Amino acid sequence: MQLDVIDQPADELGEFFKRKIVEFNQQHWEVKERLPLAVTVRNEAGEIVAGASARTFGNWLLLDYLWVSPTLRGQDWGSRVLQALEGRACERGCRFVLLDTLGFQARPFYERHGYRVEWEQPAYPRDGCKYFMSKTL
Image (cartoon, rainbow, N blue to C red):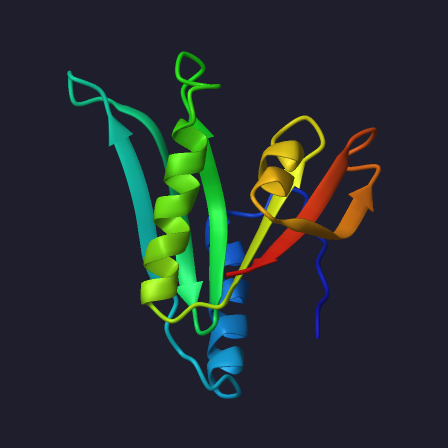
């Protein structure tokens, strides 16, 4: 046997480990599919100016990213995107949402929409904080 510590591993190595964990998990989970979901807002020129990407997984909406162009912030577009995403997740049978946000990002926004902090990860990545938040739909 040989154990190596690799300071700059190829992306393929991380994908290999991910694939192996997914294979193991699928033997034990009653739900096999993570279905992608997205919402987009486009301007008159067809450019994406706001939106979100997520996945539904059994009872859960897993919100990966929600972004609003700086020129649209404060105009309720983030709320509309979030509500549209949650609505479609409910149609897919989701009952809960899980997301994470950083201390300088959107915690107050999510709290206004009924999310609560489940866990704080302090000192992330050094002086900041990461919040894991959930909501019952």
